[in-house]
Image (cartoon, rainbow, N blue to C red; front, top):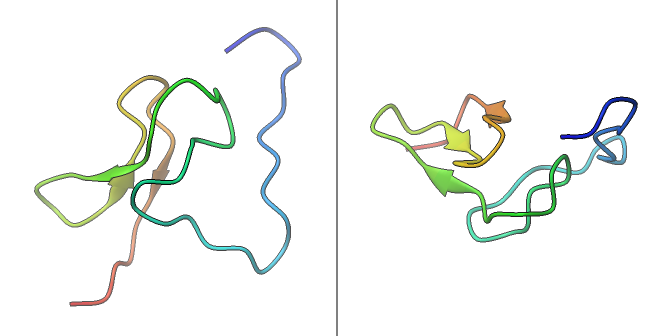
Length: 51
């Protein structure tokens, strides 16, 4: 991620599996082994997935 680049997630918008990362725009969000949505490129993480 470039210096000064912002993560543009609108208030109330949730990350979803398969969506393009709103921070780096270079990878798709995927679930890790702990059911967190993670960007494999920049590491943006959203915890709290429903099971």
